[in-house]
Amino acid sequence: MTNKIDNIEKAEYKSVVELWESSVRATHYFLKEEDIEYFKSLILNTYIDAVELRCIRNDDEKIVGFLGVADQNLEMLFIHPEYRGKKIGKTLLNYSIDQLNVTKVDVNEQNEQAVGFYKHCGFETIKRSEMDSSGKPYPTLHMELKKTTAKNDFS
Image 1 (tube, helix red, strand yellow):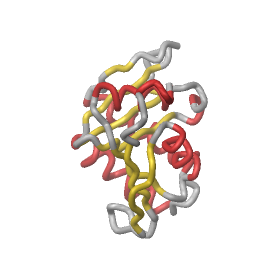
Image 2: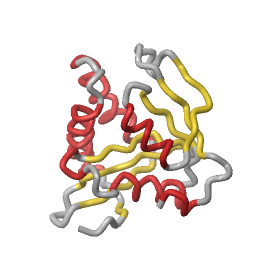
Image 3: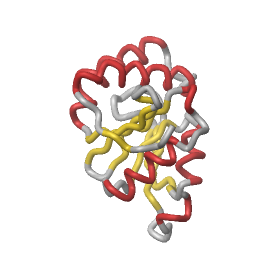
């Protein structure tokens, strides 16, 4: 499998949401079932159209990881559980920084693996909110790419 960045067609949105759900169930253990269903609907009907989407596909052309960017903010980065640990997240993040000018990301504080990933990749917490952007009680860390971080420091 090559980690080639690709576009996502509107006809693929349903499979993107299925990947999102698989990823969330594997990493967001703190979310309640009703919150997963709430966000699932928002992802499909609102959020996906509000971001610039890119993905990585497996050898069968199935999407195995995707990102969404808006206003230099990484809004989404999700990897299918079977493909975690294969540098897909890092490849997508590097692409978002190099090609889409990402400098910020908001991450659930309780998603410790994601927080560690972003810290390792040169982001630092600049602010914390008690609630997520939907007003739900999931503390969020607002992170920014350190100005001193060279692109290749986290390749």
